[in-house]
Image 1 (cartoon, chains in turn cyan, orange):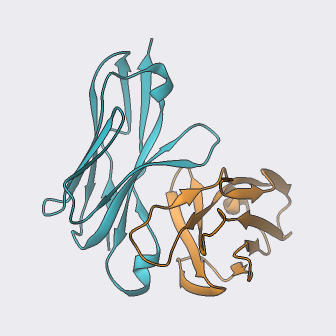
Image 2 (tube, chains in turn orange, green; image 1 turned 120 degrees about the vertical axis):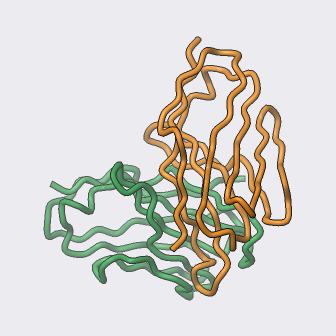
Length: 115
Length: 114
């Protein structure tokens, strides 16, 4: 059974710092990995999608990497801002029959950027 | 382009009642998924629909059901509500049936069971 872990559960950094969020998964048989952001009381906003054949994806100040063989992904946020404060979740789409129609999520890292 | 729309945003129900939640996907998206989010369990998959067919169902009791209409809009129903059903219910849509496009989520329906 695929398990997705995000450590740490919470992170607090001063504004302007570069930071890395971690995501690990137990089964490397995945189609892709997606990073999301969730603001309090809101839904999930898609940030980046990395296909299993890709090593990284970039969008603005965000860069996500994927090492499928080791079961790891990182989300790099450059020059953090208070507006980046949110919970960041990663999710994998497994390979394998009907199970491919769902994502398996980590429990997220709650990021606080202090002005 | 409008995003995924979920209605209502908030619901308060009593144990034993039933509830229906609605989801309108992004225009042109034919796949709709539902997830339950709780502080303890995180996000858990409920079911996924494509072209009115349920393709997968998560590990939830039969009290949880859903359907998709010909216009891709979807509803989920929870019967005989229990206190543990209190959660944020999130709907997501995807552009095509393949696995390569991102999932887009709505803002959810917050269900409170008293």
